[in-house]
Length: 274
Length: 314
Ligand SMILES: Nc1ncnc2c1ncn2[C@@H]1O[C@H](COP(=O)(O)OP(=O)(O)O)[C@@H](O)[C@H]1O
Ligand SMILES: [Mg+2]
Image (cartoon, rainbow over all chains, first blue to last red; front, side, top):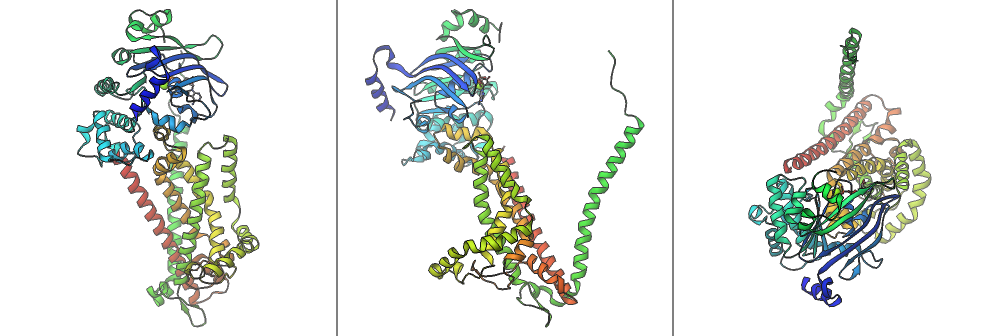
């Protein structure tokens, strides 16, 4: 599945753009009358981790949830701009959002395993896809991918809810990667976890980027520093009376943290604002 | 700074004590009342209890001249009509609950629908009975006749449509318990954490896949509670059933046949009952209370086990 898409993408694009899996350009994002985000333009490159940082409420989650049309669930949501994935705009009226989400998986802030067995949690997405192959093998592979296999291999029939928070989050990662999406979106995946579980997930992310393209939202600057290749810094603009998030600066993580171009970025990473 | 706090005055304390006593008294008075009712009913039923014993629940006659009494058809009719009504009401009620808990339409429309369904609970039982006789029975007659003529080989439609009987009774009863089931199910659905639905949608589930595979199972305990509550209501419903069920002590699986229920039996026979028949009616009342109690206890047990299981998982 992924090899076919790869050749498809590289055939359709050239040069430096070749590795851009998602090209997101959010001109304006509204919830009803409220303009939540403006002017966020970020390319997501293959096999890399891109982080969104910024103070709470600046629209990180909103921007991330545009990438797999999760925002469609919100009444009143409107987007102007585009999100190109494999050369097509996922907001094109002809595109089925359900199909988009099968290629662009998501891991949420709160671990949200379903009230079913560990095995069935991982198999859930595969079953939705009408998967007919060797289910057991696939479940094992996904759990290994999420570095959870050794801890749960003897209790696959136990409830997903019986695991610890960190294990639950890795189960959700296993569930998301089981269907072999191309992109993985993670919205503050460690904010509900303790430091040790957090480090485990970070290690896992570095490992996962060999197979996936990852976009992560984090309010933890150290985490962005540790895992992200590229980082985008969002901030809130209150000048027009509203509270609209926008992209202040985007670049290589090292550069953004050591030598930011924008004064705002410098202040934020030194803890002077936010 | 001036402190605005002061110790409670003696009046406050007295008021507090008095109020506490009052609530205590009312709680116990309620319990005493229930016990008193059960005691009085049992006392009045005693002659019949002694005379007919257990066979009262396994025989089928209600003959005051020969003083032969048995409520097997009424037990059957009570359970059958309630079960059938519950089947209809669950399908519709859960459907309504899904509709008003999802955002298929603008919130204002959902609120309207929710209120209209709840309004159904405000219509008096006797109105339902009249409506059943003058609207429902004529309305379903063509369909019922068709069912008997074409599918009469099935026991379910094995008798000709008699007008008042099981089907119209169950339909009207279903409408009467619909508000309970819809409202309680809706609460259960609304209380499913949104992150579960998001998890399913995020994996590429359609809205209906998310509802049927994740949201409904997560709400199933609450929906089951709704059904038990509805069952309790259906068992005791009297007026509409007395008007609609046909008041005929036959045991038939045919939904087109007339039937009888315990509550309708009580309502119809009290005016002329005397002597041992009063005892028999009281005995029938005891049986009805027993069934209702049993259903509620079983329902509570299942709910309790389900929620204990959920807690154990965390
Ligand atoms: N579903 C929603 N409906 C309306 N407003 C929302 C919704 N989700 C987020 N917002 C608003 O959009 C802004 C950005 O929120 P969010 O994207 O969650 O920020 P962040 O993830 O950076 O904390 C906030 O002002 C928030 O109140
Ligand atoms: Mg957020």
